[in-house]
Length: 198
Ligand SMILES: CC(C)(COP(=O)(O)OP(=O)(O)OC[C@H]1O[C@@H](n2cnc3c(N)ncnc32)[C@H](O)[C@@H]1OP(=O)(O)O)[C@@H](O)C(=O)NCCC(=O)NCCS
Image 1: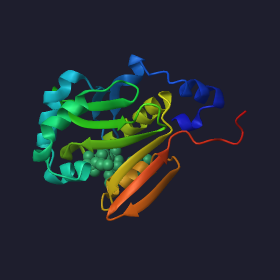
Image 2: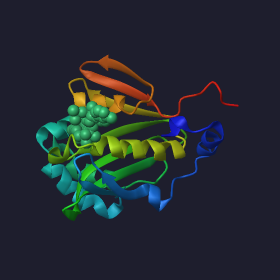
Image 3: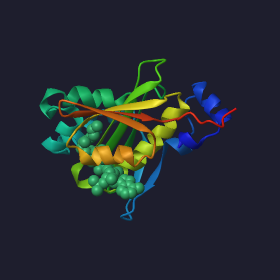
């Protein structure tokens, strides 16, 4: 994780070098369950698979992610999810190991160009939740975000969404939370300042 990088690496990071190393951006998640789950950067032609993925998710999962129902925005969201620029917008998808045409998770960040803070969100298909996909992809996303000069992730999380809150805490990065009308606003510092930097 970038929090452990020395200053010279952080300075290179802040030069906004996009991460283009294929080895960093695709591979296999080796889950504690023994499952090997492929992952890669999302692609524009993933839109139909993203649509199918969202349709397989339960109402509860959709609600926890979007604070609304699928009918309102699934097609629009699948198009949005499928497009990234690799710097200000980035997403990893996990692929069903039994069917390479099906997506089972997506983690994503988005920011305004030049901003240090990016909005972060994740969604994992119900039958794959709790297997470690969310946190593994999020750690990889943090590394990419650091490489693109993002210093903070910001997430809006339902106060009752313990799994998401625990995932963010298990990143072992400094975080601040404040609670407003049942929603937690969580800011995670991706590249904390160190005192011994010179
Ligand atoms: C929230 C969500 C993205 C998390 O992804 P996930 O793959 O299910 O979660 P993970 O298995 O990677 O990690 C979370 C769990 O692992 C635990 N965990 C992660 N790393 C751990 C570690 N090193 N040690 C112990 N526990 C750990 C977390 O505490 C949490 O515990 P739980 O499974 O007992 O609840 C997913 O559950 C989801 O899509 N939920 C519905 C939509 C949603 O809430 N999206 C977030 C909107 S901001």
